[in-house]
Amino acid sequence: MIETLITNVIYPLLAVALLLSAIRLAKGPSLPDRVVALELIASIVVGIIGVHAIETGVLSFLDVAIAVALTAFLAAVGFARFVERGGRRDD
Image (cartoon, rainbow, N blue to C red; front, top):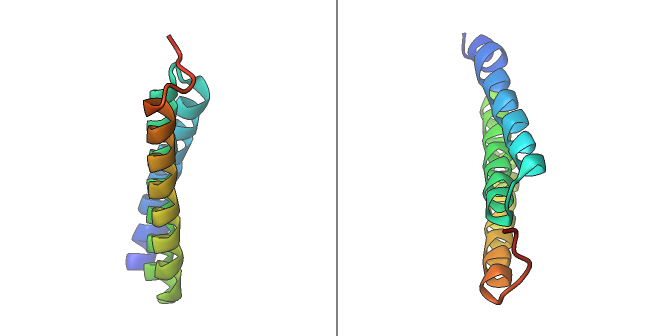
């Protein structure tokens, strides 16, 4: 039952969310919009990895999800510092 739910509902919803986030990343219009879209993509990838870990029962995938989440957080901090120091601005 849970495998059917994961395959038929959860993965397609995550795929649609990933597609819409990728469109926002490509479209912009400003740098903060793109940074938020990139963070959302990272969160969706963490969700996909977590769902896969639940589906397969391999809990080692959760370590990968944590590593991806930490990397995304560090990237967000880096982007924030870049913008704070007067980096490129889209007006």
